[in-house]
Image (cartoon, rainbow, N blue to C red; front, side):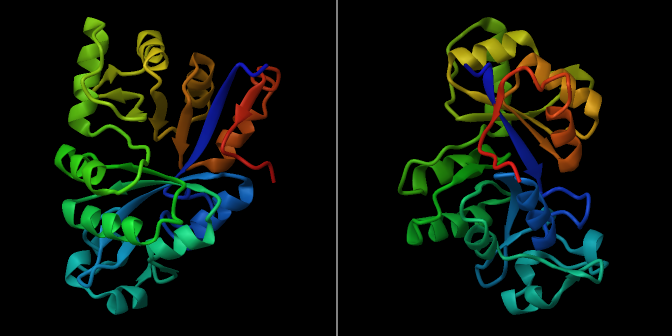
Length: 256
């Protein structure tokens, strides 16, 4: 019998062989066997969704221009670091249709465009929807016309941490608590948190973990998933002698 189910998550597709949030990065993670892919969602001037974190292209292209000020035709011509196209979200969902996509809507406009897409094309079903913004996440939950799992907004995370401290029933219901290991020097991951979440059927994913020692510690504690930029490093840890006999099931995951 399995000790527990663990989910390896490719943060923005990983960044070991290609720039993050590019088709090449997601392809690499997928080929390694990752079946849970995390990305960010922004929307163009004409309502097309793209997998990109920042709302401004300056950091990745040198051009000081906002995503929402450009048409999809313009965005399709832009290269990240002179090499990588910015992927359309719909293309990613179509190409990796057996993977679960963890979608972080960066603002209300991208959320509205995402809701429109999901309500129109319901074959996109392996999804986990989220946003740091409470208002945006509430909009997504109310507007998507089917039952899809969600994360916790930043406000909901803080509320949940208080509920855990006071041992109260959670006031907000998300399916996945996705948090950093620590915040401003305060450790967020504890046995009490993990016990509370397990009791309330909340899965705990920790981001963004790139050190092997931290991966080992968190897996040993029993977290449900880890987001990483170093997809190979996480797989190496999971296959190491520390965990090979722990009967951990990797799901959703396909061993290449």
